[in-house]
Amino acid sequence: MVEIIPKPEPVRKLPPWQNIIFYFSIGLILLVIVAYFVVDIYLDKAETKLEERKKELAQTGTAEEIALERELINYEKKIQKFSTLIDQHLFSSKTFEFIEKNTHPEAWFSRLTLDPKKGEVNLSGDTESFVTLHQQVRILRASPSVKTLNLAGIAIGKEGRITFVISLILDPGLFKFNE
Image 1 (tube, helix red, strand yellow):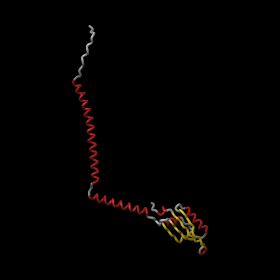
Image 2: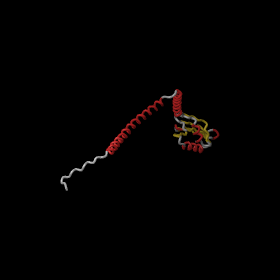
Image 3: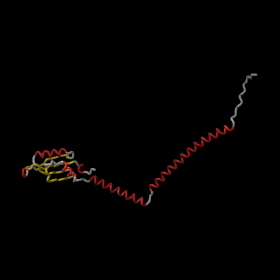
Image 4: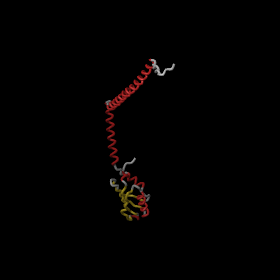
């Protein structure tokens, strides 16, 4: 027999154990998500406390450590003051090195006047000939430390030697301390 009005199919019910497992799984997933956020919050708080403790430990120390730290600070200040002084100090003795490097073998300097603050050097000397004097002037002009050179006085001295006075203005960096 054929029925014209179809009857709805009976609704199948899931077994109760499947419903229990489904709801238990959803609850477990929600519990894990909540636990993750709770642990993250506690971890942040613990890190903050750890940083605070480290700062407290760094600020406090034994009396010996504090005394050593003060002593180190005093030494640091002294070194800074010394560095400032050495930077401002002019080493006049470097003029002798300059003259030694830039003197012609046949020229003799008998007098030296120096003002290191201005970089002025006056050299009085003598030589055998005008050629040697010319070579000496060229040697000095070739030096990068010489800003200006003035051949002030030339005369023929005793025994036919040429006497001269050379005025130089040297680079102030020549007199500074360099390692």
